Image (cartoon, rainbow, N blue to C red; front, side, top):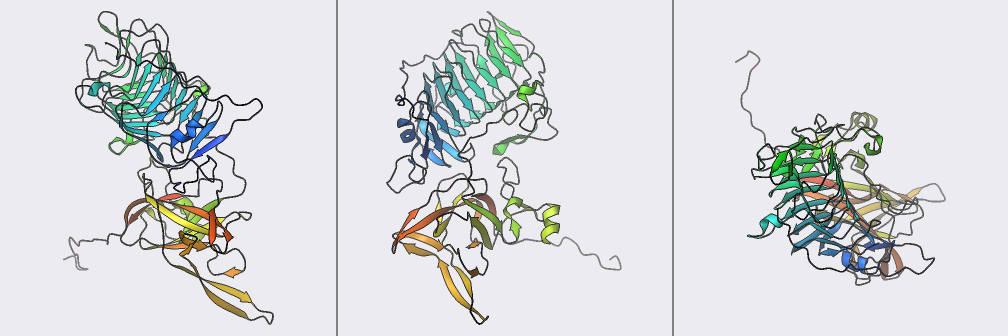
Length: 526
């Protein structure tokens, strides 16, 4: 296979960090429209490129959830970590490639993003970085170059490619050219439309032994494409992969084939299988494995590849040793949503790969403990009482509750009226009550603020909003913003440590229940 010519390049070197200066975290949040940006958590940059531009070797650019419409150019030594591939999107707007890795060394990490809408996903040239836990999808080029729209392309590069999901690409899942010796471990490649899921078959491929193990490669379409193919100059170490359903493009099945003047089918090595991986719902992007999948506990049994729970490796993108994102540790400060109505927030399905994501699924224990209905796969509707708590030491006077359609950054502040009652115990033992309008209020140009009740006796102490969802339908992500009063008519946003419960995603459905009576049977049987 003729290689695609690589461009000339010179790597972008980071500024040298002065001796004795420790690495820093640089924050990015596309929601920051204040005009004040310095890379702090309080004033993050609003593009990834700005964060990378100020980084020095050893620094980490931490990217908050959002939709970042830009092409990302990595710099050697500067880590770039998103908030998870389901929430942190790089939309390259059809650029030649979405993420550029030119001359990036071993110590650099790119992780936690959904890379989409480009002619090539991640392009590595002369690089050895780590690419981990990303989703690469919707990669295409116009004719006549549609077959070069690869998920990941390597030119003279040997990165670690681990726990990535690559699907819906017009070219190959992973294409290697030149001197390449990567480790390709625990990835899922599906619906690729040219040649092979993983290819080391370029005519210019150099000698080397790339490691290819614990991957799932499934054609997922009717295109004439093979599984894992390579040129005889390359000697890959292949084991514990599931290659399922390739087209016979090499004359002998095309699961694993080597080219040395002609194609020769070969074994997939130890642990190789070829069975339907039983993804939960690939048509909707849910590539988690069914519990009965043949890929469960079928990866390399060496304990170094074990899943995070200590069990044997599951093949595919969600098996093996997933990263600890290493975010700043929680200090007892921050906000958590505690419940919706009488239902604890923990009873909403939070796993985005679960078909019930965003629905209430109340456990037997919680239903019995709280004497509430055992909802199963139930959406939200009507008026939702949102409960939540700030840390005792948080310097917060006001807050906003914000919501956005799931998977977008189109955040809006909610503005439903909230009124509470303040009770006062008088010296004579009587109790008086005062009606207090908590919000929405406008202070210093900031709208839809709600007063945080911090002292005294209040009705529904932790109630933060009664959200009128009538008229809404679909999946929404709900979060918050905190503010401190700095003058009679001014507030400033307060950055607080992030945590797993400072946001939630819920499915709203206010459609009326429709019933049909198909038949009636009377007591006499008629």
